[in-house]
Amino acid sequence: MAKEPGNRGRRDREETPEFSDRLVAINRVSKTVKGGKRFGFAALVVVGDQKGRVGYGKGKAKEVPEAIRKATEEAKRQLVRIPLKEGRTLHHDTNGRHGAGKVVMRTAPQGTGIIAGGPMRAVFEMLGVQDVVAKSIGSQNPYNMVRATIDGLVSEVSPRMVAQRRGKKVADILRSPVNQSTSETVAEA
Image 1 (spheres, rainbow, N blue to C red):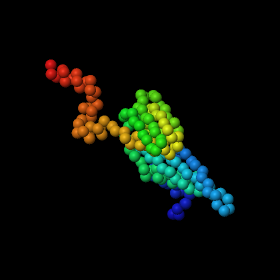
Image 2: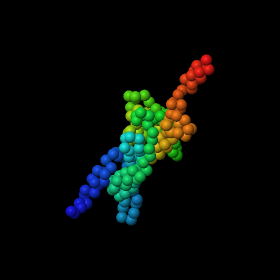
Image 3: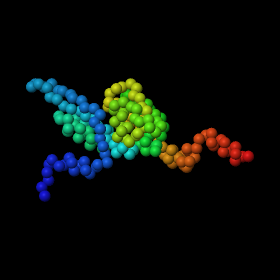
Image 4: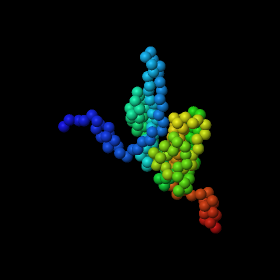
């Protein structure tokens, strides 16, 4: 059976159908040479499974499709797992920073939707977050915004992770301080 060179891309996509990707930015750069200008393209892509894993990558090539392919491959290699509350929002408010790019991300009640700007929205959609309020402060550079968003998301911790680190049960971590003080006074009486 002869292999067809045109089907290779389709077969690769069928092997990993759980990932979806989003092109965030494409940049055309030119180099002036003796005979004129040579153009190249740089692409920024965010990849995720919409169930808590996300990654980003950048690729450069002479043609746009090749740059996007390279960026997608790099993004798949850099996937990180982020814990989500009820599979739809963040566990707690968090800040992210990369260079001059700063982002603020806040947890939101059900039905809020994704309130975030371009590059941040792409990260949240690929991550699978449904309710979040986010604001970009500082740099508007899409590369720095994506890096700052992922930086903030990596610092996200779930109650299970905190309980495991402290050697306690999840119920002990989630119990509010008001309930603990009232239960102690009832136990003493």
